[in-house]
Structures are given as structure tokens and as C-alpha cells.
Length: 221
Image (cartoon, rainbow, N blue to C red):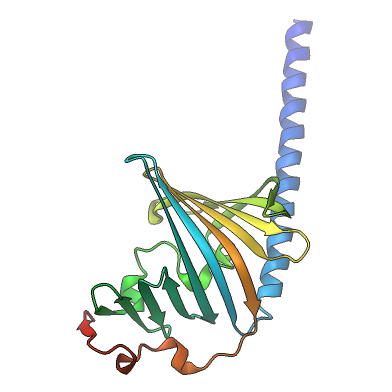
């Protein structure tokens, strides 16, 4: 009987210590991400270049792309491999395929509904609808990073089950994000360059047909 009581006490103690550690780690995750968000809110705009690697284990596929993004509030201009250009003024979205010469026009509210993450949220994706857990420390490109795990509050509404973000400890900026898809397709985004408060104009976030001779405009609104 004494042995059983002692064992139970050990289990309770272990669970208590684990709970305290988890609470501490979660608090640390909140603290780190709040600092990053507070800093990001001081930016009127930003420009970044990145690489993305998609790994689809189901079909044994690995594909890498490079791109750049210009952001100002909810407006963005996304260029991927000089093949795809996606522009949004926060209400309308233009998706131009440079190979096909076609530009699809959509309402942002319609097209973004099934995308999971909007480009305008990529540097502050943790702010809404995520549980946050401090995971570990790691090095990315020679930068010491805090690794934080994000789990959707409503996982059924998302095409992914977990996101890991890597935050540079020295300048409180997002360095890398890994999105773990439900179908085994994981995408890693690595920020190569990051420039806050760049000069932008409203014309940067509207597709100008005159700049792309021969483009076929397809309005799906």
C-alpha cells in the first residue's frame, strides 16, 4: 500500500511539474510573439524576398520557388518565380499567370476563404485563432531563433494542422515558417531579405492592364 501511495505521489508531482513547465513555455510563446507583433505594427509597409519549399510525401515531390512580397496593411503584391503575379488592393484580387497571359479577377472575400492564410497576415499569423506553444531554440541561417508552435483553435477550418514559426531573438523578426498540411504536404517559407517602411503608392496594389500587352482579363466576380 505504501508503495502504491508513493507511486501515486510521484505521478502527481510529475504532472504538476509538467503543467508548470507548459504554462511557463506558453507564457514565453505569448511574450515573444507579442513583442514581434508590437514591432510589426510600427511598419507602414514592408518588402521581403523569400524562398518556399513544398514537400508532398504522398507523391514524393519536392518543389522550390522564390518570390517577393510588398505589403501595406491588407494590400499586397506577390511575385513568384517571375511566373505568377498576385495583386490585391484588399477588396479585389488579380492573379496573373505570365506563361498563360491570363489574369483572373476575384473578390478577396471569395478567393481567400479557402486559402488558410492571407499573404497580408504572414508576418503576424499568430495573432488570431491560434494556440501558442514554446517549442525550442534553433539556428536558421546563423540566426538564433525561438521556435514557437501554432495550433489552430478550429482545425477543421484550416488546410493545415500546425505551423512552426522561427523568430530571430536579436531583432524580433520572422525568419522562417513551416506549415504542416493535413495531407502530408509541408511548406517551408524562409525570409531572405526584409525591408520595413519602404516607399509605396496605391498603384502598386492594382493590376494595370496596360503594363501587360495582350493579357486576357477574366472577371470571376
